[in-house]
Length: 261
Image 1 (cartoon, rainbow, N blue to C red):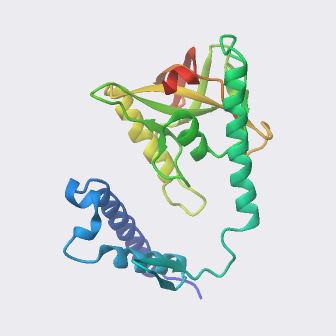
Image 2 (image 1 turned 180 degrees about the vertical axis):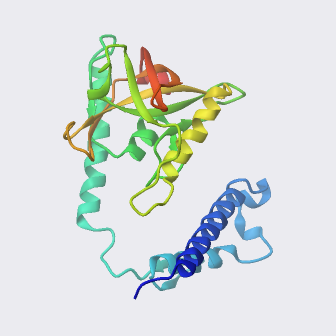
């Protein structure tokens, strides 16, 4: 059945309203008064059950409340075994790889900028190695480590090793200055978030660094990450080139133990 322009417009308006509502709810929860942030059960209504019902709708999975003595547990009745064996294996491999990285740091000096390849997700790399956060573990493009006591924080931008200095000027292309869209015409949230974070660099809140990632196949149109350089990140200066792309001019390398200290 072919949709009319009016029907498509109505669906788009609904999707945008839902997105705005979800983002507003996220901000409200994140910036709650300390009284509620410490224990949301102090709210004058049961927000947890409302949120569980929302997740149930999104996952298309009934929610079941399980009596666990003094507490009530929650289980979403997904149409799959969770976690899957593949998911457990992937998590275990990331933990093992992280431990190998820690061992490598203690066994050798990083003064020569030796590469230590880490095979893990971008979210895990930000969390465990950089002490930073993605805006969203699924679609986030950049990691942020907030500064403490008024100090400058850090913005971690991910660059491909095979693009480093390809133009002979020690630069690496990052992404376009305008938010891109996916195959369905939706604005990419990761791209939008990355541009917002660059504004914080320009205002002096964050200092930019390049995290080097290696591609499984550097010639592929859609590249997948093989590993991250777990030894060091690179300071960079950001600017927009003639093609309207944000570019990082690569500066000094900084070992990750210094970053995390």
